[in-house]
Length: 129
Image 1: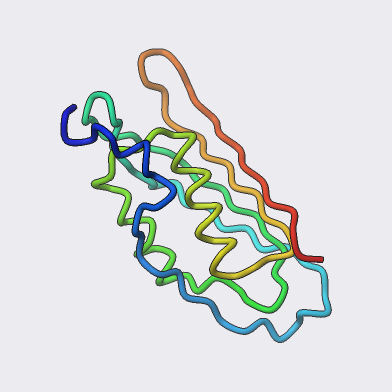
Image 2: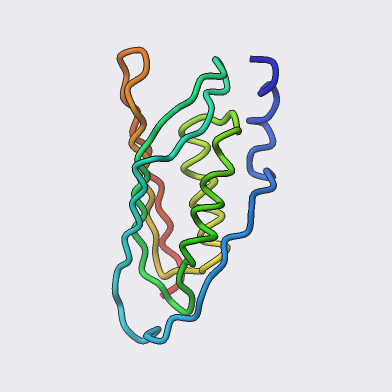
C-alpha cells in the first residue's frame, strides 16, 4: 500500500510513545520478569491488512522496571503502523532497552499464520551486568 511506502527506511527513527519505568528496590538481585501480550496488532506494510501476534518479553531488571500501563499504551500505538515483523520486534526491543536499561532482555514475536507461513522473530539484548 502506498500509505506505508518509505516507512521501513526510517523505522529506527519512528517516534513512539514514552515507556515509563519505576525504581527497582532489588537491583542487587538477579531475577527475571516476563511480560506476555497475546493481542498485539500492527499493519502489514505491503497489504495494509492487520497482523496479529503474541509478544513475549523476558528481562532481568537492573535499576528500573517497565511500568505496565505506559507499555500497554506504547503497544497500542502500533495498531495503525505498517511495519515488517522483524522491524517491530527490534524496534520494541530498542525502545524498552532505552527506557529501563536492563541487564538483559529478549523479545519473541509469534505472528499469526498469513498465506500459510507463521513468522517468529526473536531479538536479544545482553548489556548491563
